[in-house]
Length: 298
Image (cartoon, rainbow, N blue to C red):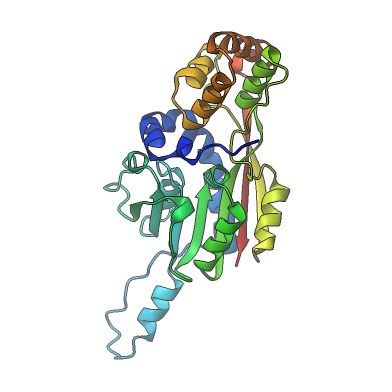
C-alpha cells in the first residue's frame, strides 16, 4: 500500500481543525498525557529552576552552573493544542517547556498568559533541524509520532537532544480504535475487496512491545510502559456520524478521500457505519480507544 501524502497531515489541515480538537480529541488523550508525565517524572523528576542564592558573594559560578544543569528543560514535540504541555505546566508552573507543532492554529490555542513557562514554536516534527545536543532533560511527544515515516530515526534524533540520564516519553494510539473499526467494517460491508488504509503512517507502532523495542534499539533503558483505555469523546450514534463525516479531522478526511478515490460513495458507507455503531457498539456508548504510554532513560 502506498504511503499517504505528507500534505494530508500538513499545517493548513490541522489549523482548520484546531477549534474542534479540544472537544473531540484532547478529551480522550489527556488521561494518557497525564500518565506519560507520571512515568517520565518517576524516571527523572521534573526540576523547575531554583532561585539564585543572592547571599553567595563568591566569584565562583559553580552554583549557578549546577542550577542550570539540574533544572529541567522539556521539549514537547507535536504539541497540538498543548494538552501535554499544559498538564505539565499545571504541575510545575515554572518549568521551562518548549512546545513545537507544525500548525500555528493549533499552537494559538495555548494560553501563554496563563502558562507563561510554555514557549510555542512552529516547527515540522519531521524536519526539526539540528536539535541542541544534550539540550533537554525530557523530550516528550504525544500522539504525533505515528503520523510520520521513519519513527526510529526520530527517536534517535531525540535521544541525541537529551542530557545524560534524560527521559524520552511517547504516547501513541493503540490497536483498539473502535470508531476506526466501525469505519473499516462499513467499507468492507460494501466492498469486500477494498483495502482500507491505515489510520496512521505505514511505519507506525500499535503495541507496547513495538514501542519498547524501538526505544531499546535506540539505546534507552529502564523502560516503563502502561495502557490507558478511555471512551471515545463522541459516543451517541448521530454525533459520531457528524464527527466522522463532517468534523474535518485531517486523519478522517484522508480515509474519506481514499474511499471516494476508489469509487466509493459517502451516503451508503455512512448508512452502513451508522448501523454498525448503533447495533455493535451500543448506540455509540460502547466506543473505546486504547492509548499506549512508554518512557525510557538515556
